[in-house]
Image 1 (cartoon, rainbow, N blue to C red):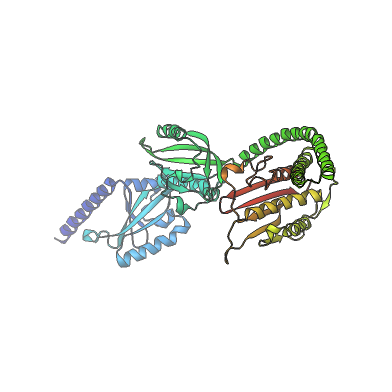
Image 2: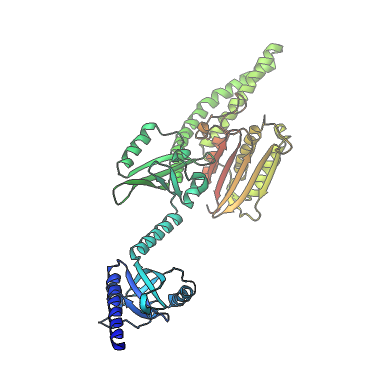
Length: 492
């Protein structure tokens, strides 16, 4: 009777065993039953075929034999926790396959309760293949690093054109932080320089799934122009749905600046040739007029006549000064080039400007870097440049009402950057209109009232700086102030 019961029980266990094998094989995932000490008790066909090599029996082998060393401690810790609490746990790792390669898997652990004590204190492990997921994560990581660390500004928008990502290069180029941009439309940068038809053509192109490339003038957060060549590409979901747009910028601000400088230099060359001829043709008649005025002044005692002659004389003097500036710009300097201490020249210019009546209530702050190397310049000419810039700054501050917190001040800095001595002259005056900035170095252009300036000071200064292979730039905002920056090479 006892043998009959044992036989029946054995049949039930075998039947249960077969039922579990059938159930395991029906599962879409790789499945194992693990004993309390970590050995493989059972597995479905997918699990057995994954691990066995050359028909080697894997049952009773320790599961850690198929795990990398870094995951073995985690595996044993999870078994202990699962045994104590019965909680379901997970582990992301790799399994060593029969061909000695590794498969990325996510292991799910749970305690197994089976009738007749067949699998007492055993654990069910379901291994889910996450190779594609890991590959996608790796691809995403590579893309994220590429986008994040590239020097090119990058922005990504949703299908409606609202910004969802910008990289650090975009933040630096635009002056906006990521927090200020996410959720905003890119028209936040618009300079309003491009017609609506320009943007309409762009949207037509990218919304049809094509790539658009063009040059755009945007504005930075501080109002400065930001020139870029931009490529905008649609982002298409595998099912064909358009889900967003990817824009990569190439900063061409320096290129635009150089183009403008080339055009400006060519214009200056033409004007210089014209100025030389004009100075010659006007100079001689002007000298005759001046001589005649002086003769009449000596021979006439009429008060009215003397008054008008003084007016003529003052205007002749003004024209003579303009002619002299024209000649100075158009002909090669006869001054001697010599090693010049830039800081000393700046200090001398400041002392001269301080004497000006207009500068009485203005504070000139200078922060000059010590030990700047002397460079080959014409001291009188470079001093004249600094005087021109300082006088312009003084004029810009006229009419500005000082307060206790904000006094009338001019800031002059000098420093060494790479192979250039960089000098900045900054004021908090009325500023220059954006439309006038491109004309600021042209002859006879002035924002001052009639009679207050000839419009030649900056033109002459531009020519002097260029003659020393330097460059001069201006940045300005109305009612905020103006900054002139001069860069002079230390090796000439």
